[in-house]
Structure formats: C-alpha cells, structure tokens
Image (cartoon, rainbow, N blue to C red; front, side):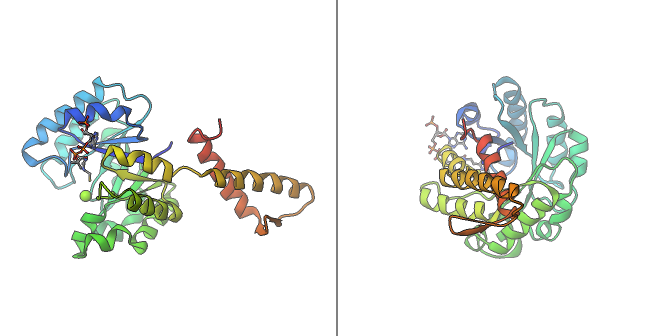
Length: 275
Ligand code: COA
Ligand code: MG
C-alpha cells in the first residue's frame, strides 16, 4: 500500500472532512487529538464516526488519530472507533512502548507516532507492536519533550535514522514529519527528498497543497525507473554468463543493486507509473 501522503484533517471540521476523500492523498488521518480543542472532543468523535460511515472514501487508507493513553479521552476514542468499520488504522500519538493492546481492542491496524524522548528510547518496542503497519515522527512534540527547538528536530538526522531503522527492522513503513510552513513548497520538497533518501516512504501533510508535493517526492522518478529497468535487464544477462558483478553506465552493479532496482519497479507499479 502506498503511504506517500497522509493528510491530517481536524475531526470536528465537517467541511474539510467532506473534501478529504477527493484530494489525492494516499491516506487521510481524521484527527481527534491536537487539532481539536478540549471542549469539542465529543463532537469530533461523533462527527468522525458518522462521516467515516457516510462518505465514499474509495480505496484510500482511512485513519483516525486518537488522544494519547493517559488522557481522559483515550477510552472514549477507542470505544467509538471499535464500531467504525471503514476506519482502517489508528494513529497513536506520543507512543512510548508496546501498543498491541490498542490493536487487539479495536481490531485495526496501528500507526504509532514517535514524538517524545521516551518514544525514541523505546522505538523498537513501539515498532514491534502487533498490527502496526507504519511508524511516524512528530518533530514539534519531540522538541518540546527534550527541551530543544522545533527547527533542530524537523530535519534531525540522528532521530530520523533511528526511526527509519526501527521501522525497517519491524517491516513497517516510515512516515516523515509534518512540514509546518504552508507557503514554502521548495522547503517541503527539500525535506521530503531528504526523508526519502533516508528510507521514509511518505510524509504527513496538513494542507491540500502539500499532497501532490508529497506524492511526487515519494514516487520513483523517470530516471530511477529507467536505471532500475536497465539494471534488471543487464543483471539477467549477466546471470546467464555466471557473472554476479558487472559494469552498467560506468558503475559497479551487483546483487544489492538488483534488490534496489526491484524495489523501485515495485513502487513505480504501485504508483501507476508503468501503465
Ligand atoms: N483537509 C481538507 N481540506 C483542507 C485542509 C485539510 N487539512 N486544509 C485546508 N483545506 C481546505 C480548506 O477548507 C479550503 O477549502 P475551500 O477553498 O473550499 O474553502 C482550502 O483547502 C484552502 O484552505 P486554506 O484557506 O489555505 O487553509 P486555512 O488557512 O483555512 O487553514 C490550516 C490552514 C493549517 C489551519 C488547515 O490547513 C488545517 O486545519 N490543517 C490540518 C491541521 C491538523 O489536522 N493538524 C493536526 C496534525 S499536525
Ligand atoms: Mg504531536
């Protein structure tokens, strides 16, 4: 499943939720947590449950971000979502350990968000949660939790590499953090390209204008697809000659490049770029 763009929509905003199915995002995350003020939580829960059922979501991945464990909204959120058949996945904010119980309780996939010091220190337990399909990163909350600045953590290589490694070890998708400046497309593209280079497969987004930027940034480029096809073709020929390592366009190519090439072709197929 593609998770190049995951659009957050405030759970109490009917107008925005009604638009969300048709904006081209791979996943939509209806939010019950920080985008909803405390006095509107009950209303948001009802709105999310109703619109999850009533709207035609096509085949996009429909997620709901609940309030964190320990908050007075947590139990109500889980109870409401257990009955929402169309909701595929629960986004768990401030995950700091094994989240399997949320999955067994609701029978939904899970997407924990690592966004605290404890979350990062326990990221392997978080990633090993049963029913987890992806793991994402929240830079602003993380900065707050360690007493740093948001700018220091939106592009922090050490944190991002740790998250991507934990996700890969557990076989999960790694999803990059939100880019807050809604008017800076160039900055978004740069951050997305860097995340992709590290191994992230998508990005959380907060505005419709960021969806196509993310979809593009996390799809293979034409050049990559051409390279991958050529590598697979040349490696196929080499195998017949009992060669494991060959020269392609002046560079060494061996089994690791075949694996990378197959991955590119698979992602290009999923993104509909090969038809
Ligand atoms: N989902 C669906 N539609 C959205 C949207 C979203 N996240 N953000 C904006 N839109 C729609 C608006 O309704 C508007 O539609 P219209 O032209 O038909 O009226 C259009 O896109 C343009 O919106 P714009 O006026 O540029 O946005 P804004 O300035 O009113 O709002 C935000 C900016 C950031 C407040 C808003 O994008 C938002 O609430 N984003 C999600 C925040 C969130 O969920 N955060 C939690 C995770 S960090
Ligand atoms: Mg957060």
